[in-house]
Image (cartoon, rainbow, N blue to C red):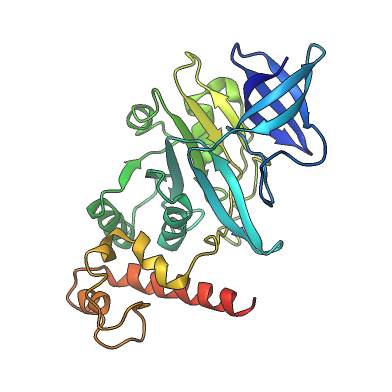
Amino acid sequence: MTQEGSILKGINNIYTVADEHGREYLCRIKGKVLRGIDVDKTPLTPADRVLFEPVGLQEGRIEERLDRKNSFVRYNLKRRMNQTLFVNVDQILCVVSVDQPQFRPGFIDRVLLCADDIPVVIVLNKTDLPEPEDISRDIEVYASLGIGFCRVSAAEGKGLDELAKLLPGKRSALFGQSGAGKSSLVNALIPAAEQRTEEVSLRYNKGRHTTNFTTVLKSQDGNWELLDTPGVREIDIPDMDPSMISHWYPDMKNHIGRCRFSPCLHIHEPGCAVKNAVEDGEIDAGRYQRYVRITEEQKQRSSLR
């Protein structure tokens, strides 16, 4: 009999699916493709709701993927197509660090674009290290845009109580740079998870991947869930019209539509309200410069098709 379930993890096209009672089944897709699914490098991800048919006590066949309420999508450079990394979450905890690896606001900007309408909370880990003024300044910019923020130190246990307050009743995705300390945070929040951790490469100040696949982890009381995702060093935003990228910047929204030309990329055009706002200090200059880089990358990608 067909049942509804939720994917906890998937490895080599074998998916662990939990039914409504928490029983787990190892499932494959029934047939070669799922019904009603467009071409997607990742047709199924953890937290996807599916219809499946149990076959025996611990195995099953996935018949259909149910509608997603949201998706976190990036561009896969190797495959030259959009790739869904995870779905159906209430918030994204974007884990970055003061150092080791280096704090990169450009990474946060790209996560915000990939997140679409999913709320994002910036989790600054390794606050036991000295925090340079430029990081504090960047954090203030994000806070002024209404983006959530939490300072923690997994090594010293600082800020974990504040982070834990964000979790009850929600499914949260932990997503961040390799080596920023996601696995250490998971172990602090859900000790039974026992996620493997490694040191950062000091030579390159870059993290090593310790989580190889996304998995759904439940809290001890079952009141909330974490999606622990593999760390990444770079992330590319999904395909979109370059002229629409600025619409996803809350700091630019009030100025869009007041430019001399429409559409306006807010880069070289004269009479641009966004550029004027940057000059007047209404839009952070560093964030604007990163916007220009992202938009130019999207233009170049579009020209190669």
